[in-house]
Image (cartoon, rainbow, N blue to C red):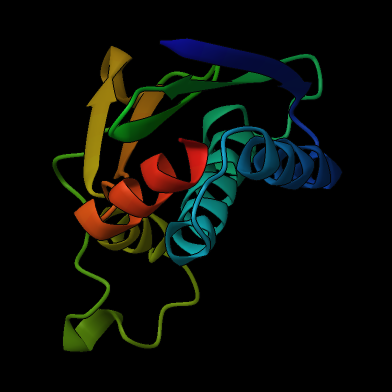
Length: 148
């Protein structure tokens, strides 16, 4: 398994660093376009939540982002240095009484974009899993034929 890690201070402008990290990972690990968008939105939202809600914009606290590359999946781990939160007791942003609220959609969005979402460390750590589509048999056979 390949792994890449970065650490960023809790400044909103560092979301650009995360976007570059994802772009570089897309090129390095040949991430398909169809999941690249989901990864970009989910991971940047998770890092934004870590900066805003976890570390409360404290630039002396860091957000740690790790990418684990496996043959059939990518895992992104986002961890902050905050106090955590109760991730089992979140308001449903689609409930009528919450539709007008300006926030509260981040975790909902992340859960719909990633194939798996796991919280740990009292909510300070989030693991997002994205499944990679296996190469179709005919493409694999064609690539083998070209290589021969």
